[in-house]
Image 1 (cartoon, protein in one colour):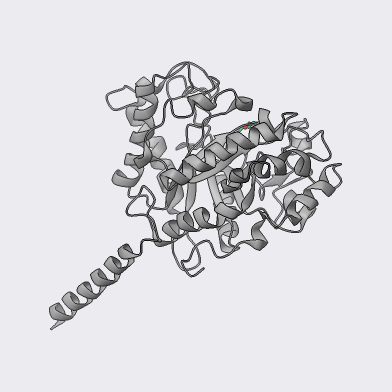
Image 2 (cartoon, rainbow, N blue to C red):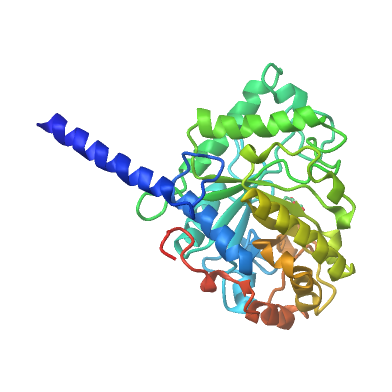
Amino acid sequence: MKYVLFVIAGLLLACQSSAENQDTSRSLPIDKEATTETVALFNNLKKVGETHLLYGHQDDLAYGHDWWDEPGRSDVKEVTGSYPAIYGWEIGNIRQDTEVSLDNVNFESMKNWIREGYERGGINTISWHMNHPVTDGNSWDRTPAVYAILPGGDQHEKFKNWLDKFAEFTQDLRGGNGELIPIIFRPYHEHTGSWFWWGEEQTTVEEYVALWRFTVEYLKDEKGVHNLLYAYSPDNQGGRELSNYYKKYPGDDYVDILGMDDYGSMKDRDPVAFSDELAWLANEAKKKGKIAALSETGVDGIPDPKWWTGQVLPAFTSNTEARGVAYVLTWRNANAEREQREHFFTSYPGHPSAEDMKAFREEEFVLFEDELPDMYSFDQ
Ligand code: BMA
């Protein structure tokens, strides 16, 4: 009897999931076993991002220009009244023996901030300035290394240990009901430049593609990590690298988000020209059933007090099709005292650009966290 009930329950479940599959309005990310919340995020980002721009900020909850590790604080919230819609995190230095990231953020605290942002309805993305696997230097060590970490290479096991550490990190990210928190994972970024060991001059096309594919397959198929969306993010370098966008593209089966990093285009460049490039990106993503994002940008120190409405906004609106880019993330606000320097990419209270950031936030087109629909369920 127990067995019969078991079979009936199994049949019912099968019917339900095939009914889900027949729903053509819902698409799957590259990981066909992605968790429900991850699939929902993929679909909702695509949908909401078609007509809106979600605003994101790196390390937003961890520290700001004038504070360090204080519960509830956020430079973005203190300027605009809302937390950002997207939280960027950086796990550089994650290895067996480290407790803090390369920017001194404690990894356990980072997990808590990720959980906190998720519980409020925000979205988390992780980048990785991975240490140099051959010299043990940092990611800016330009010595070629990819050949050594691919299968058969003499640092392959060490590299897998680092991926294991990341896999462990992701499985510890759970919401109130025990569900895994979806993460947009953005590894090996800016590879069209040559400042990291996985960069343009440091890797062949075959090596970069193999590195990317190995990482995706290892995480999802070997480690059973199913709460990731994968973001590809070449550096556009102020418009100079657009033609190389696909040069080392790992393929549609390995990428969910067509990202782009570009700092130069947000500094004194005609936003109309950049808008055409963002429109191109949005259209590429649309054609492929993916999501487009300006995954990293900013101008250090924000010297232009009208930067938000004069430079950022028109980049996404001058060409109507650029509106299809789903989100933009500005880089971190380094704590001035701890780092003994000014290094910030979003406004903080009292900064001359703060008023303009409020105006940016008030645009109907731009979404901060408190304006998001539920990104993790299908009942929109
Ligand atoms: C860079 C700078 C560095 C930082 C690195 C990784 O752009 O902000 O200070 O260590 O990103 O977050």
